[in-house]
Amino acid sequence: MMMINSTQVSYFVLGGLNGSLTDRQLYFAFALMSYSFTVFVNLMLIVTVCLDKTLHEPIYIFLCNLCFNGICGASCFYPKLLYDLLADSHVITYIGCLTQMVATYSYIFCEFTSLTVMAYDRYVAICRPLQYRALMTVQKVAQLLFLTWCFSMLEAFVGISLTSRLPLCGRHLPKIFCTNWDVVRLSCSDTTVNNIYGLVLTFSHLLQMVLILISYAHLVRASIRSLSDRRKFVQTCLPHLVTLLIFTTSLLFDMMYSRYGGSNTMAVLKNALAAEFLVVPPLINPVIYGMNLHQIRSRILHIRKKGCG
Image (tube, rainbow, N blue to C red):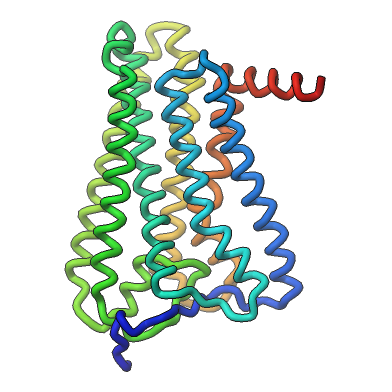
C-alpha cells in the first residue's frame, strides 16, 4: 500500500452510511430525537440538583458530573452523525477526526473515573457514616472532580498524540465516527508504543473496576446490618451498579465490532453496536437515577406540578 504521511492527510472517509436517502432521513429523525431527549433528561437532572439546596450533597454533585459527561459524550457523536445522514459524502477532516477522538476518549475515561469516585463516596457513606462529613468535604469533592477531568483528558491527549505521529496508508475508516484503533490500523509504521499505551490504559481502568467491585463487596456486607443501610444501598448503589454494567457492556460491543466486524453484512446493526457506548449510557443514566433516587424524583415531580399549575 502507498504510504501517506499524516501531515499530508486532509480528511478521512467514514463508512457505514451507505443506505438510501429515505433510510438516512428516517435515521436522521430518530437520531435527532435521541440526541434531543438525551440532552433534555441530563440537563433536567442537573438543573434540579442545582436549584434544590437540599440536594447539594456529594453524591448528587457527582451525579451531575456524570450527566454533564454524558452530554459531552453524546455531543461528540450526534452532531457529526446528523450532518452525515443528510450529506452526499461522508468525510471528516484529519484535525476533526483527532478532535472527535480526544472528546470521545475523554468521555470514556471520565465515565470510568466518575463511577469509581461515586463508588468511593457510597463506601464512605454506608461503611463509615460517622466520618462521612469529615471525609467528603466541599474541598474534597472539588478535588475529586478536578482530578477526574484532568486525568481523563490527559489520558486521551497522550493517546491521540501518539496516534498523530504515525504515517498512514489509507483514508477509509469503517465506522460512522473516528476511533483510535481504526486510525492506528491505517499506519504503515510500527505501532508498538500505541499498543503498549493501550494495554496500560486497559489495565488501569480494569483496576478501577476491581476497586469498584471490592467497594461493593463491603457495601453489600454493611447494608445487611440495618434496614436504613439496605434502603440506602438500593436507592443509590444499585443504580450505580446498573450504570457501570451498561457502560462496560457498551464498550465491549464496540471492542468486538472493532476487531471482528470486518464484513459488510448487517451494517446497520454493527454501527449501532459500535456507537452504543455513546448513545445508551448518556440516555439511560439520568433516567435510572431519576427513578431510583427519591429526593430527585420527588423534586422533579414537584417542578412539573408547579409548571402545570
